[in-house]
Image (cartoon, rainbow, N blue to C red; front, top):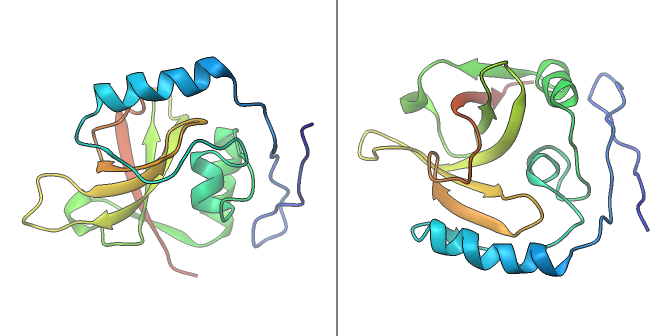
Length: 153
């Protein structure tokens, strides 16, 4: 059974969401393929259908958020400020993975950054799979562009 929860931006704009999509055997099987394809990514949690990457980042792991327009509305309404240079990102900042047309297809939270790292280290949830700790670019076909944001209400 799928359900929705009440979810809105700080300006009370509604955010569409969904909980409880079933986890199939193929989803569980594909987790082993993904972990083999990304050996440097560390699995943090088991698979769950309660939330996706956007639900982890913007809805406290309570639900799945799918629409790119909803993510852009959260960024605008909740006081996020764009960070132009990845080297200026600090732990707690958000990274959005954006395709060529500007649609947000993945999001994560910066865990580590700085001059000594080639790329920021990120926590993100990969689809219905678990959460992974990984280099910003070490993800399964998300992106190819990155946008960094800091919440500055």
